[in-house]
Length: 406
Image (cartoon, rainbow, N blue to C red; front, side):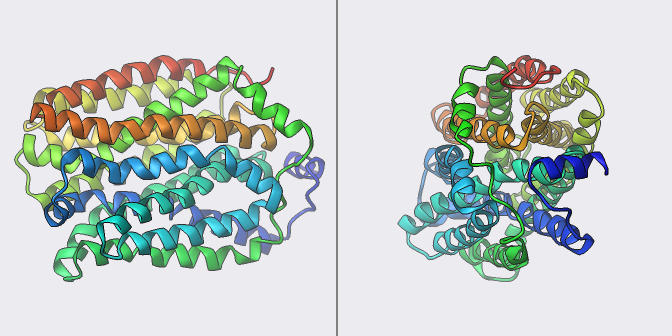
C-alpha cells in the first residue's frame, strides 16, 4: 500500500477508482477557476462604473473590499459547514451562491451592485477555505502538486477575466453590466461538474476535538505568522488588482484599454510562479528561500511603480505578477504544510483567511481614500512597499519547519 493510500485509509476513505480520481481533479480545477474572475473582471471596468454611477475612488474601492469582508467573516464558518453538511455539498452550494451574486451585481440598481458583490464574496469564501483542506485530505502525499494545479487554474481564469472584461463590454456592446454577468456561466458549469463529488467527498472530521483544534490555533505563534502572511499578501494583491489600471493611466499615461491589458499581464506572468512556488516549497522542510525570492520580486515591482512608473511599466508589472503569484500560492501551501492533518488544515485555513481577508479588505478602500485625499498615487505606493517589508518578516516565521499545535 502506498503512503497516500495508507493516509487515506487512516482518514476513513476507501481507495478511489481512477475515474473518480480524474473527476475529482477536474472538479477541483473548475471550482478554483471560479474563485477570481468575478473580482479580476471587475477592476478594468471601474472607470466605466464610476462614470455611470458617479461614485468616488473610495466608494469604488468598496466593490473589491466587500467580497473581502464577506470572505473574512464567513471563513471561520466554512469548516463548520463542511463538518455539518459535508464538504461536497457545501462546495456545490458555494458555486450556486457565487453565480447568484454575480447575476444580482449586474441587475442594474446601485444597491444591487453592492449587495450582489457581498453575496458573491460569500461563495468565494467557502471555496477559498475548503479547497486547501480538501487537497490535504484527498491527496496527502501530493499537496504541493495539487496546490500548484488548482492555484494555476485560479490564476489563469483571473488573467482571462482581467484581459477580456473591458473588450467584451466595449466591442461586443453589452456594457459593464453584461460583461460582469457573463462570469455566472462558468460558476454554473463548475456546479454541474461537481455534482458527482457530492456523495463521494466525505464530510470533514466532526470529532469533539475539532473545536479544541480551532481554539488552540489562536494561541499559536506559527498560526498567527501564517495568518499575517495570508493577510498581507492578500492586501497587496487586492490593492494592485483594484487600482493598477488607474495607477498606470494616471502615472504612466496609458489608455484604459492598455492599462486593463497590463493587469491581465500581471495575472498571466503570475501563473508560472503560482505553479512553481508550491512545488519547490513541498520539496523542503522549510521555505525560507522561496519566501525571500517571492517577497523581493513583489517589493521590486512596487518600488518601481513608486519611483519610475512611466520609465519601465511593463517590467514593474511583470515583477509584481511573479512576486504576488508566488506569495499567494505559498500562503495556500502553508495551510497544508504547517498542519499535521486535514482537520488542522481546515481550521488553520479558516483562521488565516478570516483574519487575512478582513485585513486585506482595508487595502482597496484605504488606498482609494488616500488617492482622493492626496490626488496622487505616491503615498499609496509607498505604503504598498512598506507592506512588502512586513510580509517578509512574517513570511520567514511562517516558512519554518514546524506544525501548529506542537
